Length: 164
Image (cartoon, rainbow, N blue to C red; front, side, top):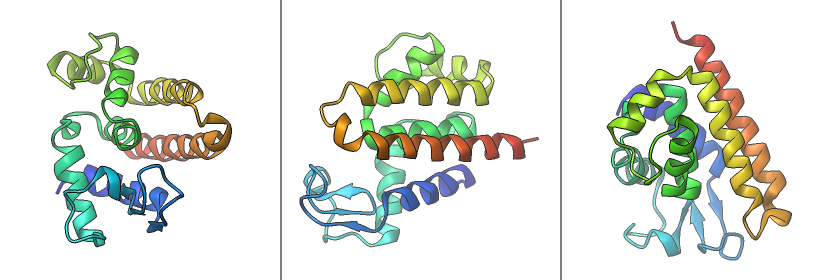
């Protein structure tokens, strides 16, 4: 696995935590951010940490071509996909001005590379914040979601500061 994925999944696992019992997540019991009701292909249940990492790599990172984005943008979009599925790609496409179809294709990739990564991450995270406000459980979950976006932004800023 590449360094960008390893770093991104490390941040994600930190934010998701180890375990949330059934009733705390609409997807049921959750391990490493993977809700049982949405990840019934994970057997045996519960997954261990290496299984969760491999699942994120095979089911989120590779299919969405995140390894083809600038590193901090890839991390921000990865975090979004885990929470919003294809809606996160649609948010990215709106931010870069390409056709909004939920597929990370060559036009979206080229447009993302043409932008300053720091500005794109900021635009993407602000758009995610707007997306959250339209969800039915905003009143209950909003503060936690915004805190997560702030953490993602801080990490991305550090990441771009370390890039050559």
